[in-house]
Image 1 (cartoon, rainbow, N blue to C red):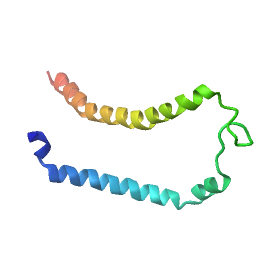
Image 2: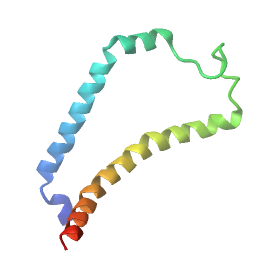
Image 3: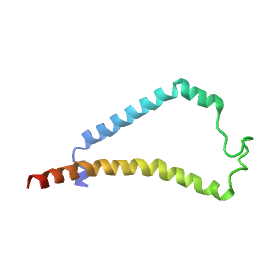
Image 4: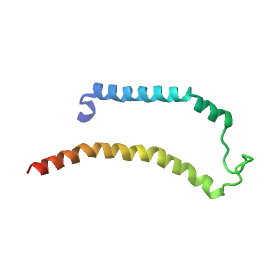
Length: 98
C-alpha cells in the first residue's frame, strides 16, 4: 500500500496526460478522409453477401478471443520490453566498465 501512495499525484497525471493525447490522436484519425471512406464502404464478414456463412462455426467462437489477445497482449509485451530495456542497457554498460 505504501508504494501505491508514493508520488501518486505525478503518476496519475502522467497516465491521464497519455490517455488524453491518445484520445486526441484517435479523434483526429476519425475525422480524416480515410476513416470516412472506410465508413462509407462498410465491412462484411465472410462471403460477399455479408451473411457470414463463409466462416466455420468454430472460428466464430475462437476469433473474438484472438482479437482480445492481440489487442491486449501486444501492448502488454511492448510495455514489458520497454520496462526491461533500460535495466539491461544499464547492466551492459556496467559490465563493459569492469
